Length: 390
Image (cartoon, rainbow, N blue to C red):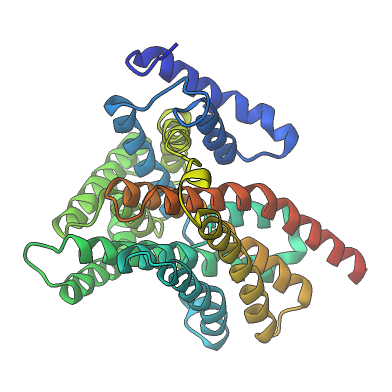
């Protein structure tokens, strides 16, 4: 029975999986995003063929992708003091530049286009700040130095990957007025200005709203700022999904907006984000295994290369800066996780035909594998290290 034209049953089924099934899957330590993606694949057109995506479902999924990127941007910490020093640049070279180089060489050597190879390189650069943050919180109070180092480094890798993806999109579809270098300069300048001055502006108005109807006024202010910043990025022709991440990043420096972030999380994770993750699974297609020559080699090369390059080079970079072997291994494992940027930006790149189904499925498979295995493995390594130290 096909439900592709009956949206209410489809949405009901997706929300059932999105809200209830992940709670069940927690018993098996299967992450929220991973469970939804693979559930979408199982019932999708390339497996059981029970649900097929249509324009309405893609519209909801598009909103969900923007919510996911916005919430990821909100979680970005202040990183300047941890990144722009000798230790930070050393770690970034090993855990960022070298994996990105491998991510470019693998598809390019296999005759993929320059733009597709560059995009895969950008996704090799990223890490999942949300997964890394939530995992480090389970380490306990003794890991303060590790947490304070991992959070800004991983967040900066995610931001860098999103910016590189933006450049690739604008290389393919140039801005109608500005050249690429000028456009990049304007974008970086806008981000810097917003990060520097938004906090002061919001603090002033929050103080002004402190006497009456404080919560309602603050909520209206933040929503107005969110729309204004989104409009500014749209003037530079930034794709909406990348714009959402940058908006969240610019607003993350504002104090006292935890309640507002919680409301956005409730809306996003309660409805739109599950639909998007389910839709990602619907688009997965493993038919290349039997149809495309050397496809298995491409798939395994990208998946294994993405994971091992982060783990190995991240371990080496952390170790060279003086961290213990246990902390270095934990960082390598955590930095290998991909989720928000890889899924959201990869989905847009697939829709724009920057990458084909083979590369898209490979990238989504990386997120499914790393979010499933790397967090519990890093917790296990951390506990073993603590036991040896005692």
